[in-house]
Amino acid sequence: MEINLIAESVKFLILGMSTVFMFLVLMVFVLELQSKIIMKFFPPKKEEDSTACNSTSELSRNGNLAVVAAIAASLKSYKQSK
Amino acid sequence: MKKMILQLLLVLSLGTYLCASDGIKENKNQEYKSKSVSELFGSLYESTGLNAFLSPKEGEVSHGVVVSTFNQSGGRLIMMAICFALFYLAIAKGFEPLLLIPIAFGGFLANIPIADIAGPEGFLGILFNMGVSTGLFPLLIFMGVGAMTDFGPLLANPKTALLGGAAQFGIFGTIVGAAFLSQYTGFIDFSLKEAAAIGIIGGADGPTSIFVASRLAPDLLGAIAVAAYSYMALVPIIQPPIMRALTTKEERQIKMEQLREVSKLEKILFPITVMVLCVLLLPDATPLVGALAFGNFVKESGVAKRLSETMENSLINIVTIFLGLSVGSKLASEKFLVPETLGIIVLGLVAFAMGTAGGVIMAKIMNKFSKHKVNPLIGSAGVSAVPMAARVSNKEGMKENPSNMLLMHAMGPNVAGVIGSAVAAGILLSIFK
Image (cartoon, rainbow over all chains, first blue to last red):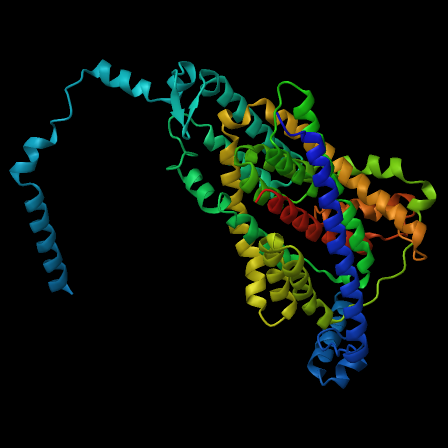
């Protein structure tokens, strides 16, 4: 065989690892820049989570009195069954 | 209603009358010669699988190549036994059952004599030509992977992407290893293309391996796919000893800062950003990265839930069935029972080990230069194998300190590894263009 397989594959190793790193390093820089820009100009709004409420007061504030009633009823029946 | 049925009957009876006309009847049996009962049974026996196994014929053609007598009889039985061993591993040991079961069943079907199921006219062959030779199925899988993956941990700490890059050392190191083997051993002779296709096993990414192997070394595809998926299943066994050997107890106990929250806009922009980079630097990787980015974009856009749900469930399941079966078709004895397979199995293991070591060592190097310490255990997650490799990192970290949760930190390099191996695949494809 004319070409030296090992020398050739070592060249691939150098090319491959440097390109993968170049790509990822560039990606890291771009992502960091991007996050800085986004944080500065489009700061994330505090999202109001309507699906998960942690207390009955939150629930009633949102007008979900039916849910509060259902929870109270189920608690009552659970206590009675004990 | 009654009238219609009557009309239908009339038409049908007319049809049968025409077919039964005398001219055809005389010619019908011309090709058939009268046979005695024993001859009938004899010819039936000759068409059984039993006969095909017991008395293989010289020069029999199957799947488009001449098959040696050993591969027609003993070889097929060995392959069926291997397929049953894969069934056992999948069912009893839970090794990647979603893939190993279709692959092994495909292999079982491909080794059936006479039927030629994996040939160009058999259904496995049709599936193979349709989706694997063209590289379509791996791309569809990548779409599903994109729709499943949350790149949040990577966005929160982009530096960990470098770990995913270092783990790709497994790919390129293994190419050197394969070249070494073919230079210095007599019985294994890989071309550079084949060496590259074997190296990609080190990316620990099934679809990428299949995509590259189908382009560079279609004959080795079966062995490469089986090796890739088997070692991915063995990640929890292969990685921990390497991780422990390369790190000290103090390093394993490093606690990492909590990840910041990532805004929705960042997540939406991420696939686009990666695509732009890929378009500029390495268009050869865009099929893989593009499919991944598309799936992820649909998911993160949040307005096409039906599409992203289809991609990450139904679509990926359907394609996995097809992909598994068609990869299995390459487990036919005449293609699998060659010395090269042994080389691939050994090199695949080497590739995984080198990738793991590369990631861990990179983490240690990063610790030398950065004030934000990185636990080197998450380096091993840089080989893709999502999310198995990240879970292994987490488990090893918990062994040293039960309160040290590394899972989310390890997901960063883990998903970066998917991108890294897609980039590496693009490089390999561009070399051999």
